[in-house]
Image 1: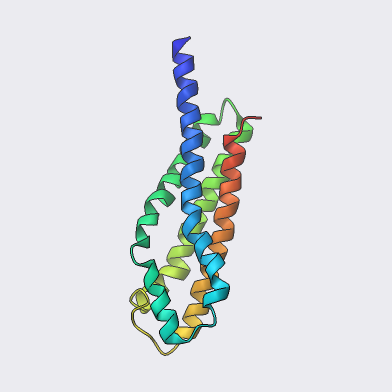
Image 2: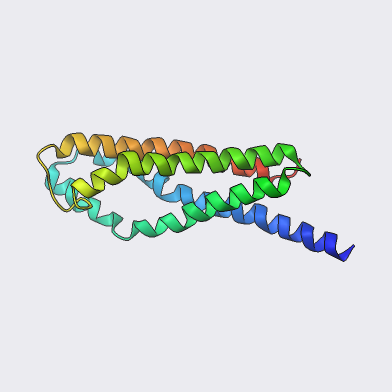
Length: 156
């Protein structure tokens, strides 16, 4: 009996951890999405000045990786006892993984070309547009991941 209570408590903690880490993973992408209308038309000097606010944001990789791991583990732990929740947790893990792939294919190369937005290349406006909209896409996908995690975390 005591073991069941402990196991139940661990599952509750895992559900909450997955939800919190997925919410934290959504923060930087959401910020990018909501600042897009205000930044997309800035002149180069202003845009590159504003881009300086993202220094240190690589640390957001930690909650992103923890959200991916927590959702995957939650899916595995629930696969026999709650298939509904297990599927939602796996959907969230796949969405989070997709944003990582998208980041490394579309966003990271631009960060490298611009030396993290400290060097202004000739085609900076095209790079800016691609970079901003790639972040917007990731924000939508991470929001869907958050909803999927919430579906997995909330008891039916």
